[in-house]
Length: 493
Image (cartoon, rainbow, N blue to C red; front, top):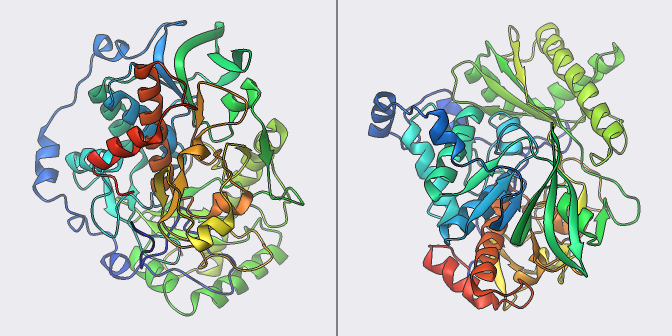
């Protein structure tokens, strides 16, 4: 069994503060915008020649009418939901993936090349859904992705062009025989005696219900579980603090060589701290921290950050807080361009704002209480479980939130996640995976990278398919059948 890796990484390419720069992009940063260094080779040429026309008839066969019944319904089309839907369909279940927004991919599609970490395992295959996503991106060629950076928080990842990711997910779903529907937010649930019967979605025409034998909640906010009556927790134990909400953005006309030489050099921390202190004193909106990522487009860099400095707790399950995050986020992006130009951040002196993400990226809201609640102690000590169905690699990443101590390097990379953590207490025929899973606040932060979320969703999808096919609830399903299937699919447990 795998318990550790040398490359600590987990989701956020965040700098805790501007005093110290923790990450090193290494050779990938020096190579900057080269497009032939990430294993595409001949695939790039082939990808340019292949047309990918799809007709209305071909598309609409995958999009169900209201009320269609399925074996498995997955709610939420982010990394965990993609893992669940593809795995369930791969196991042969008639599967529907419901998504509230107009695209699949979640934060990977909105955060503009932020690395999708832990897609590989120590540079090699992670098996299962991870391999399928990577192979699909390789078919698109060099425009689709760059190899990810390595740092205390990043590793085994990819910087993926958001539109190519969206296209790849559509194709993967269709190739797997998985039905899907966008613009279908979960707004309710129908239960009988603690058994989930249907998911209720909002449409422009009114409410619609979808029934299934088994459901998987990958909404990030635990929406389906919440409406079904499952017990949830929000925020840090004790004070309710939440990790920051971020509206990422991309900059064009960037001298990427100079930017990343500066960013990975010893002067970045103190220089950026001075610049931001001056800018804040002059009335500019500034974030607690900023980090930068390479992209697949020459002269374009992606910017992640910690949200408006001093903004306080924002809970994205509350529309008012969510709107505040969007409003302050756009000003942060606009002001950063002014700061970069006037203060002369190396490589950004003549930058332009290319675009912001389609919506803010939310790191933490509800967590659903399962039959096992994963803790930071499990992550630190590497607790083993007989019902392990996934492993979480990387580091503890709280995205700049001040904790009682620095946990980031304490996690035992490759620690186990048990099947019981997928099972909400008090609701049958429901599994939960992703950031709304069964953890404490710090337990969720321990290895919260997108690749790890895919792994949890993948296990939940296999379990849902088995439950439907065997005519049992997930709570009585023998987790060994899930373990055996995952191992045969190349997954390391």
